Length: 322
Image 1: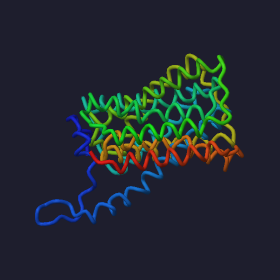
Image 2 (image 1 turned 120 degrees about the vertical axis):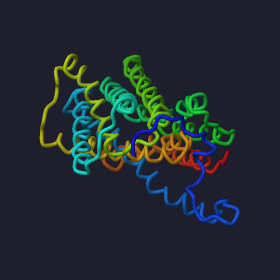
Image 3 (image 1 turned 60 degrees about the horizontal axis):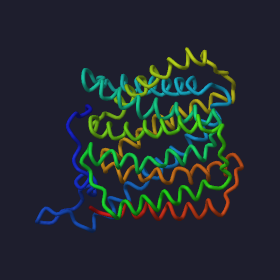
């Protein structure tokens, strides 16, 4: 497949269940719909877990490399791996306008988002707060999708989004202490939020039929070239290649960049932006759970209550039909 350049359909049509059994009238059999939703469950769970692990790999990676340098290495490694796979499969790389659209989406989703997250955390923003800010993506992406993609967001979905964000805020409220020193980092996190919001809307508008391997390779390599500039000029390529750094770099490149973004785009091709982006409300709680499991961070009562509230909001968002 090659990336499309035609407008994506309204969310009312994009978010219908995958075609199942049909009756004589051509209407999908309702009995097939639960199976279709169940088939998508592993991809949705995987997206949340993989995206959440990115905050932990970023925290660990910043111990060995400066933010833009770490991002450049992550994107370049992932892009080269995908480029090699595309060559083995003899897939042709996109050209002309399609290549440009892929590069723009990749710079927004990859370079702007992740490098801004890394800089923000390097400037002192806790990983939980970073996850909370990026979790605002469901609202910002849905609001952008209304005028740009002509998607519709129902009152029920807005209620689900509000419940989810309330749970997010409750879950990360424990242990967060803000100070004026965090303000520069918060500005970078806001930039990262803008990057993923605008990037996924742009992706759905102009790259809806992107070939996952060659298309993602183009996006990652474009992102690596963009962040290479500040990595060289502002940081002087500050990285320490140690035995402990390589597993972190490989995880962030192969799992977070290749698998995580691939899952995101796959779900965006099948569903509306509002439904897919609502999954990100679960990322802060999943990040907290992984932090407790792998880094010994504590899960308090507010975190558990927020997890329940955000889960309810996300389920509501996915159950609502336009």
